[in-house]
Length: 373
Image (cartoon, rainbow, N blue to C red; front, top):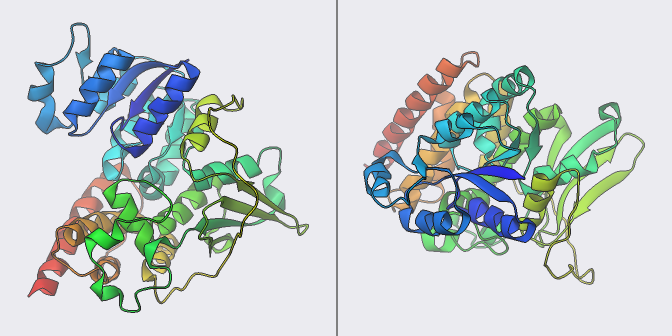
């Protein structure tokens, strides 16, 4: 089996390489960001034919590459040669272009980049259909739904229920405006990148997952719910019209859904200890007043068009500002709301996505400047 990994030095990328070691999977291409040191270690071990990195690091990487390894743009890597699967794990809107290029080349996708489906779901599916490419969910929640739906008919689905850990601030502190970046980066269960960890703490990440599920599985937004499950062992439920519930359960180890996506429909064994079944499993309703970003994601989905693009761009700017100590934690949702309130929505097109993304970032920065005064 041959795969290419977009985002090889990130959390999902490095765990995908763990699975590649287990299964002796051949790595055809690696695309990274700015972590050239780690990328060079990966190149030495896995010997890909093609690599990519952030444009600002091209010159530095070029002189360090072993002979025979080609340095390309990330979109070129996935289009140069057909592989069995492309792992789309570049975070944020930056992952959209190479994901689209992979589908255009007819490559099947293991999708870990939520934003590609959130901002361009209908367009992404159009590319997949035109090029006979398959999209396999890799996020733990969407992998869970995907597994629960194997062998089922969509007409019998009543609702999807995505679980959320509730993050580090599920009940405390009472005043979230005092939260620091250091506190928000301490997720109780998962080890993720900074942006995703902050999004998880605000439940915005769960909002992205709701929108992704909406487009991935063609389920109306009002049929997709979120439940807080602090133990992060039940990853999602599907409720059927006959009253039955199916759930996918597993440890909070991303290598398990990654292994499933890479080998679907096979289930090869993994060198991990079985998850203990004894313990307390809890489920709670979401406190929407405490976590307003989740409802804003639903609002953007209902607005449709370019609203999810605007919301996603606003969040990228807001989270970066919070991590730089420029705004308070509670200002993140205020910025998201401000951008949606000011959006002149339009239909979804590739050109529209680019223009809306630029506009939303500028609008978010304008709101941040007003907050800082």
